[in-house]
Image (cartoon, rainbow, N blue to C red; front, side):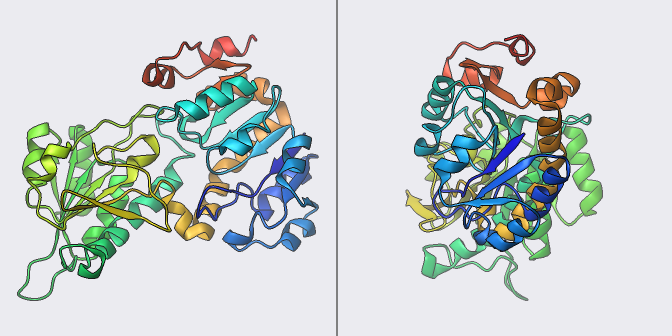
Length: 372
């Protein structure tokens, strides 16, 4: 198979879809790998590193898209990239279609077979290709939130860990999954007073055991959220409904109950955000203010630590990428129901129910798509 890796063009996205090691593995399996020049530079991988393992470097993204049977990326294809996609081609990347009707429409029009990292599953019910980036985003959330809390950045002027005689910041984390757990680990490590909310009592019990009293757990009722945000210095939105739009958990009206200068960090912004006032921002201009409350809603948070993120993502995606290349997408998906769960579009058909429900579009099952 001919595998293509273009340079990411989303603003301030420095990750790359394939590492040189991944290219080496694919080539060892008998596949051709084409990489756009400087695609890996933001993550610390020079063109020479790809050439050393046998990959071909080309000057333009047009060449990558035109020759590849499978495109391997990090972020969702941007409008100019979507025009290059074609029927019969496989796209393997993050998509986050539920809050993005324009991308969905373009992918369906192209006829491309799009497999989304974020909906591939595993035997434990997890999302193995989303998990490493959720770890990164979760660990970054308290860091970026503490930066936003600094008075010079518009925040309350609160130090996350406090000092002797001065209380630490109150950090509320909504969602106790991979993102929430990673955020709690860092926030607690920085000395903050941390409360994690979740609707799974077994998950709350797990967090209580793991953190051994270093944080507070609470059931995530609407009343609990409304109460806790009134005294929070930072609220981290870490809620995920796989493949679907994120639920809105804090309304604009509730912002008036919060302390002026407190910070909302919306890690769910890729799926539309879990605060009513959330809108996607970039690393270049990451924060904005609504009713006195700062919002950090960068849609590609892991891109800030591109090398760590690229290596972590590459470790997770490599076995699936090789399966797609070695077997072809149909056989690979037919033999692996977890990879099949990643199928979002094929031959102009939407194949993921949660996206169809979010956007009001007709859809078929991924299993039925195998027969097309």
